[in-house]
Amino acid sequence: MARAATTSDPFNAIAEPRRRQILIYLAREERQVGEIVTAIGLDQPSVSKHLGVLRKVNLVRVRRNGRHRLYRTNAEAIRPLHEWTETFERYWQHQLSRVKERAEALAQRAQPPHDRARN
Picture 1 (cartoon, rainbow, N blue to C red):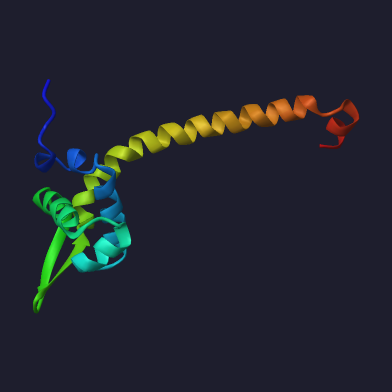
Picture 2: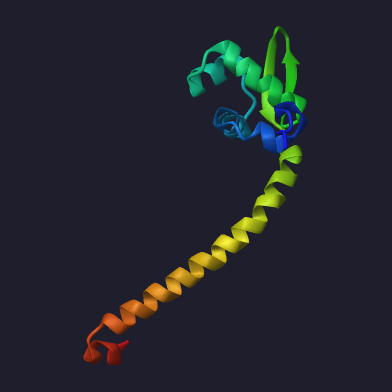
């Protein structure tokens, strides 16, 4: 089965680590392309290409301010991604709780009997 185009689906768009890095950077505040270039360490054409992909799937918005374009993360469009990942967050929380319980039980058994009585 062929993979969907990067610009057709937010999940495919964020599969690229640099795009996720850009989204995180833009989550704090609006930024110009030059600021993103400096912060991320990519050249301007690459940043512009990534921003274009993110705009096509509506994960980034752009606003003109005179001659400048200011980009920001579209938090509302990220909501479905967040909701989908919450499913796995609950799974991992459960798994981590089980690991913690096992570790505590092993630590309890490893204590000498006279120390266990105090706990």
